[in-house]
Image (cartoon, rainbow, N blue to C red; front, side, top):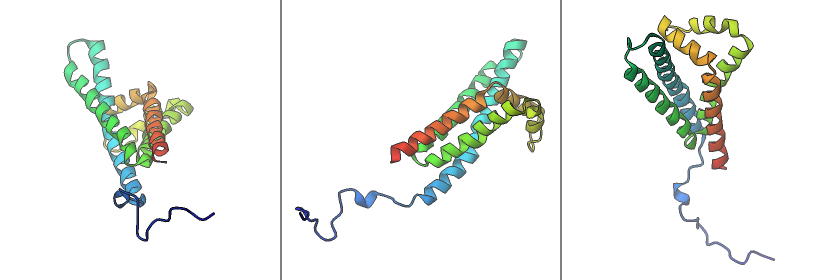
Length: 160
């Protein structure tokens, strides 16, 4: 039986002019943004966490509100990376994999080498090394990595 309702020539459903089918550019831009912005969020959150830890151990010597602000700024940046999954799921997934899951698994497999590997990062002073080391050893890298990968996976499923 032939199709009862033939569409007129040149007809497209409403809103079809706003659809974009080129995902390569969006994916590349999303991956680059994810790989650049994620370490900034991790740096803020890790440094704030290390400062709060220092404040708890030493007492009122350090500025607790600055450390809390660093944690909030880092968390908001990581939230924006997770929200970027609506634009490019691959960017959020790659950021979670590179900056969360890989370092977390490397720490599980080679715990004695964690501080040396973090110390080999270019242009990072000892304060940042301690902050990143505690970020990885306390499991935050693995947790945040899986959360970002989950957001990327959810964004991919949502697009389908």
